[in-house]
Length: 106
Image (cartoon, rainbow, N blue to C red; front, side):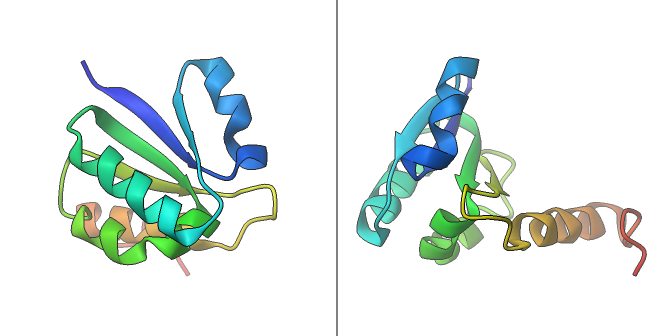
């Protein structure tokens, strides 16, 4: 059975542990890269939520999994605010699956 992981800085993701998700804390780029590679290649996680800031550190690694069903890598805002990366990722995924922008229509 698959699990859900959350990767990012402690302040942004600590609450996800209370929901039963596996949380992995990383503030610096090297730790983010190491943890993301471990999580993504483990085969244990169907979904990996990653803060937008952490996603910036591992964007090349995330791209490797963009065509894979598992794990689904989803960028979420952190405590520092929303950069728009997560919503752009969702928009691209919808356009790819459906063939057009059915959510934003801009």
